[in-house]
Image (cartoon, rainbow, N blue to C red; front, side):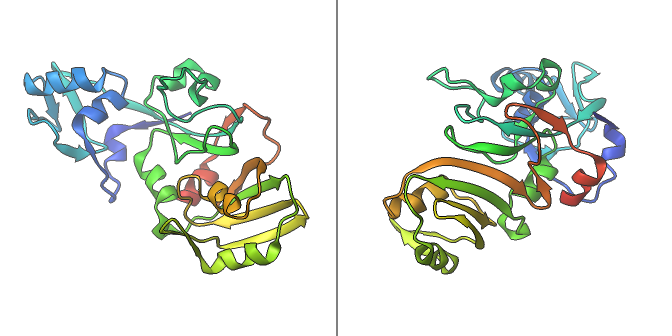
Length: 247
């Protein structure tokens, strides 16, 4: 675990703005709703200044005081990679009571406002990054940074590779353009697709257009970071070098 003092983090030249109530909840102090009440009551200070306006956005590395107590003096900055199993969701609340990825991670980490960097849908598996560093997450997620994501796809029918090749130029499905960066052919029913931007259920929609069912969809790499031999449902912390690749 990386323990980074908040004042040291503030030296960064990059400023990420976050809604204040979200930030308070992020540090595990209270729910967003209770945070809003604290803000209205004038009990919250940001970098020494009272903040009593709902919806205000503040630098993510601000020093936050509630009732005179700094709630984020020492922040455990976490960078984890998880092999997400199929049958888990990436959100913390689900009306259907489906299993979520946070139950796979020790409770101590869950107390520090962690969230997934992007998502894998319920039926998909593979490499998922988890952090509480918004700048790290934004660097990976924003399409302009062109960080490649690789997905191994196994299908129930032979794959028409001429159609796959056409995806490199982009195709429209219901008015939305979907584009892959490139692909690697393994077998007649297994291919690895590379994308810079993964729209919601993009790969599944592409194969549905070909009337082909996906048997397994697994993300195997994000940038130079690979899933490797990490076991299903297990996770580990990233090394400093691995984090540095994305920062």
